[in-house]
Amino acid sequence: ASRDALQNFLRGGDAASSLQKNTTKSPKYATAEEEVYAIQRKRELESRKGMIRPEEADGAEDAPSDPGTRVYGAVERDYGDWGVYTPTGAQLSSAEVQGVLLLSDVYGAFAEDTRALADKIAFECQPVVVLVPDLFRGRPWAPVEEGDGEDDGVERNAEGQTYEEWRASHPDVRVDVDIRAAAAVLRERYAVSSIAVWGTCYGGGRALEAAAGWYPGGGVDAYLEDIYNGARPPPPQVDPIACVAWYPTRYDARELFGKNNEGFSTFDDGKDRSVAVMVIFAENDSLPGATPEDAKLLKQCLDEDRRIKDAMVKVFPDQTHGFAHIGLGSGMNGRTNGNEESGENDGGSFLGDDFGSDMPDLNFNGDAEVACLLSTAWMETYTRVFLPTVGSPVRDDEDERWWTLEMKGYSRRDKEDIRKELEDAISNYEGVEVDFRRMPQSRSPLMDEDNDAVRELDRIEEEREQLRQKILEQYDIRPDDDEETFDRKVQQAFEDGALKELMMDAYFDDSNDAYW
Image (tube, rainbow, N blue to C red; front, side):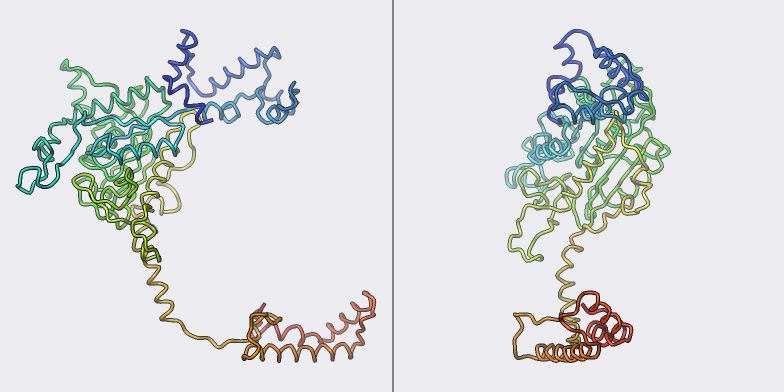
């Protein structure tokens, strides 16, 4: 179903599909209910059965001409299916295709890690269109190898530019325009139902700016000034309804969010801006904008901003900048060293020598997988349009683990403490005298014939057999007794208390705790 839903969008979306069939554009509906009603009205009129009200459809029997369609006719009725929470509503919702605008780190759209992340999002969230714009227009940050540049200890690219010089060659306004243009492509070329913006490192900062509706150089005022001064207006705003940012850099949290933010309060269509924002940080990150202190400030600003319908900010313990995507393209996720705004990472995988493995280079980063699963779930939850997700926001959940900063239970030290716990348990072990009465009432074939346990078990069994013979003789219980006579004699022995010693001593101690 996902692949079929995506075909029209790969050909150019609903608009392009309509032009291929005829020149008449599909009608627009004000609400989802109107669209469902129109579809059902068309189906029922074409069937020549006339309109059927919902109450008239209750209990009605379908009579399919093909016996093989009996289950379909009973379960997925067409007639009377007028609401959005119906088979038709579900079909329309499943036909939605979300757009994801993936904004790369400084290594550009064509870096292996970014390409791998785009593939991962597209595979796990289908049907979805993932668009990765080239924010640096073919000139990403590419430092030369040591010894190939100037010998002053400063990292440079092949053109001899330092990092800051290279960054200055990509003006913020131009980058912002390219991001807006990419969003327009998603809407006009692929007719996506909604857009989520997802950014890593440098791209994470740009993703937050897009979510806030912020314009470089001064927010709303700068945007309006450029328009009124006769400058060429930029493309429409990105207007995402969901945002995911991984260890964002080069942004101002107070300008983007909070009570005194400088972003747009509405979308381009005039509706109030409403965005769900999720941000991932690393505990050992030192880059400006991506530190744990920045995480606290950003969370505070998001919580104060009425435009934010939900927010989740998480700091992963023992991780460094880039842990969730650096190395993804080379199969070494979480085990590669980077620099500048991609940072470096020292691992954090669930497996390693501390867990008995002699393969330290296993390509599995548990924290990276958790970050990606949380992010894709967040995006899918908040990008539905026809049947949007309902319920209380994550930040209002009763379980504080969802809205606190610390990502509890996933740190490397938590996982590697298992060996210490085992060693402590062994060193603090205290021997306990064995109570052989707790052993099962049968001899195991694996037990050695000549040991204390076997001898104690034999003694217990001998005592029980003596008690059993005594009860049989006292109450004249015979093998040839019929069932009624046998039950009567045993019941009398039980009422007299003769069975107490036989049945209870072997199974209970003085505290009345059961053995087996």
